Image (tube, rainbow, N blue to C red; front, side, top):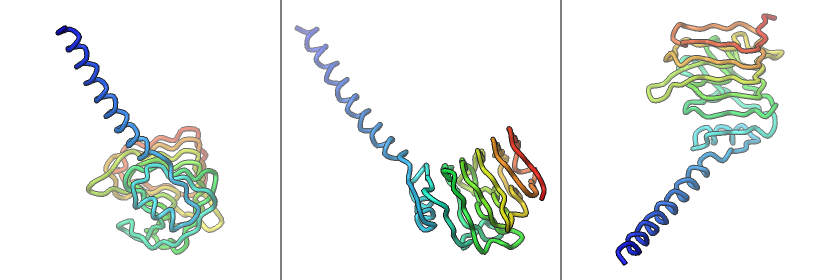
Length: 191
């Protein structure tokens, strides 16, 4: 009889932990559902929210109204988000000053995207709360109006940069604070 009670208790405890695990898994899965964006405002909202993966549904154009600590930027990727351009282009107007950028990032993944504007296409940055590896995968930084610097870093936290299967038409400029930089199967050229 004691063995039956013990077995029943173990089964009951296992069921409780199983239910808890399912709830935790469901909550974690809900946090990783990609957010699809079609407008610049939707992109900004997704980056300011809890989204971990943002997928563009079309070309997006916006204005550089945010700060990258040196100048203006179009968007800040500051919590390790993944921005999937889905084969589309991001155009940022008004990011033409020496320190302005289309994207300022403290870490995360930017992929399948064309960045065709901004004095600096991607500005690798840091903040006091977040800094990790910056990954550019299948990214083209090129366009009729710039960028002058495709990738730039003046203040990093040695987080590193890894570029894979990407094309960069313009200068690159890094301070030692960027850490290790890898270019894997990339085309780098000056126009």
